[in-house]
Length: 153
Image (cartoon, rainbow, N blue to C red):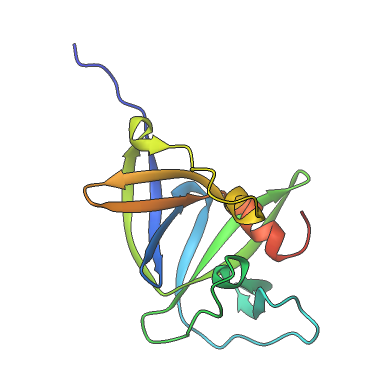
C-alpha cells in the first residue's frame, strides 16, 4: 500500500521575476485589473480601494511591503481577493500581482523553512520556500504580509 503524501494547494503569482504562492483556501477570487481609488493619507502599501460585490476592499501592493517599489499596473496585472484572520475576525483584502500563474499542489516534503538572511521584518512574511525543478516559490504568510501593510501588526 502506497504511503499517503500530504499536499497543500497554492495559487502562484509573479511579482517581477519572483514567484510567490498563497494557500488556495484563502483566495476568494482573482480579478482582472480595474480602477483602484486612491485613499488620501493611506499607508504607501495600500494602493487604494475597489468595489467588490458591494463592499469596499483595500488593495495592498506587496512590492511596497517587500521594499521593491510600486507594482506597475498593466494588462496582465490582477487583484487577488483574499480572506485573512485578524483577532478572530475575517477580513477581505486584495493583493496586486503582475500575473497569476497556476494552482500548485505542493507536498509538505517539498517545503523548506525560509533561510535567515536578514534581521529585517521581511523574513516574517515568508512561511516556506518550495523548490520545483530549478525555480523557487516563496510561500507567503499572507496574514502577516497584509496586516503589516495595513499597519495592524
